[in-house]
Amino acid sequence: MIDVAQISTLLSTISSKNLVGIGMELKPYELALLMLRALDNSEEYGYIVMGVVKLINNYEVAGLSPTVKDSAKEPISTALILISVELEVEYDNVNINGKNVFVIKLKNSPKAPSMNFIKDLGSQEAFVKNLVLACFNLQARKHYSNSIEDERNDYIGDILAAIGYDIKDQTRRGSSSSGKGSGELDIFVSKDRLPFTVIEAMNLSSLSTNYINEHLDKIFSYDTSGNKFNVCLSYVKIADFESFWERYSEHVTSHSYPAPLLSSDTSIDEEYGFSELRIMKTNHNRSGRKVSLYHICVRIP
Image (cartoon, rainbow, N blue to C red; front, side, top):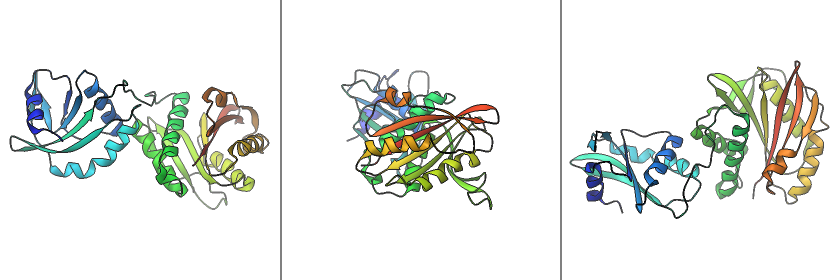
């Protein structure tokens, strides 16, 4: 239970170490950083209070609309996903001196919490790792066990957006497989308003080579600018995942791509070393430049 008197005392305490006061709701990634800041002390609980103004030694209650609670669940849930340990949390509106503030109460963990994700938005390696971590979170959520592809893509896109990537999903861009107009790519990522990478995703219950080929070719037609790297992401529901991965790897290294295949690299899979998520990279010649395509296969329980 959130103690109103405790919050009131902390707001008026000089440099309270376990309370972070902010004026309004923030993006999930920023919210996760504030959670870590509120817990970076020896107190049993840390607090984030929205609707206050920081003064020199304490906080002034400015107040905010009670409706903030109605939209708080999703950003708080997403922020918690970005933190390395599971935290106990509760949140509610609290009346301080006749004004409403919104309080998030977090119980400190014996394990030092940190960010699961890498805040290096310009790095290709960091993006791939962040995407892999987003896939792990998807694997762990039973809700997505039997979901359609769009729902899984929405979840992955939401996590990437929470980290700070500029995400657009189902974007009309490039050429469709029929050549009759623009196709829909699954997730388009930009940086500084410039194209960064494209993620093309598919649900697979078998090694459907024609279906896979269609998606592999789509990536190059959707990526009209010629990104340094793109991603083919497969959500795989199949009993013998090891055998599937062996056959998938063999297939994508023998496929005739729109951009000629230069080489393939499975060393990244050894670096990660997970059994239920496999990853490799193919390198291609596109208009005289080397570009890469990451293949990530996620086993869905």
